[in-house]
Length: 306
Image 1 (cartoon, rainbow, N blue to C red):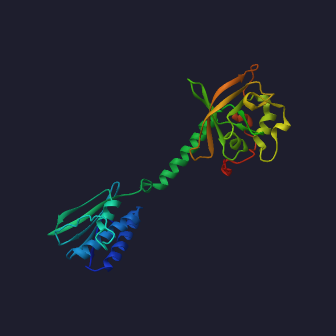
Image 2 (tube, rainbow, N blue to C red):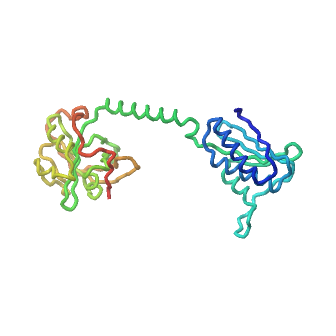
Image 3 (spheres, rainbow, N blue to C red):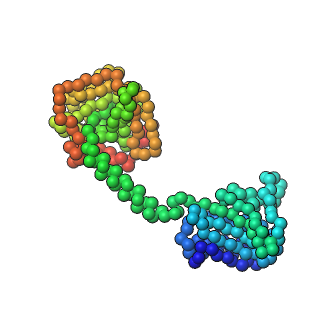
């Protein structure tokens, strides 16, 4: 079907149904979405022409680069107007609906009468939804590959609140400000640590070395929902009551400044260091060193973080 189509309509109420059916067939033929709003505009324009216009009545359908243009022509040259809202008015609000749903609308002289037209934008995703999905999927895959190539260092983040201690293995972290010095840590919503961290004022960040694989396994594969991880390692309370792991000499205690939830499966904690200790030079543990670990929670579990 061509990008422009016309449908002759009798001057009777049943033409509204006929116009909707013709519009649906035209949309299917040109492969566009956004039928519902367009059909509503068509119904209002046809109703207006049947009630106030003179035959012949013709539905016009145009395909535009970023939407569609619809129009209904009749032999009455007098254009309708948008009526103000009034509770007792039983009709006359059709053009208000057209005005609300369309980008632009108007009336133009046509064949001794007029054509009332409206331009309706189509959803952005309808331009090529399948292509967009493919591109987005490819982009996500590429970003994951690039992130893996970066091979980030691994840390254990600890927190405590009212006697409840928590800690987990984290690969999503980085310095995020120079002045003042601040660090960003992303904790999975599925993790027990995330829920405790949201209540805590300070967090502990332990920078792991390659020889800390047992600690990484304990804090990466086990969940605080089921066991007390700190009972299985040497730990003590540090500044501000933050649990500190004795085996990790490279560690920072930081004050929680901001927690941000953008709706994804992790919450970002921005922290500022208040206490720190550095040990002897060690080879940092990286993401590739823990690729064999099975996480205690899958990210998609998204446990409540209240």
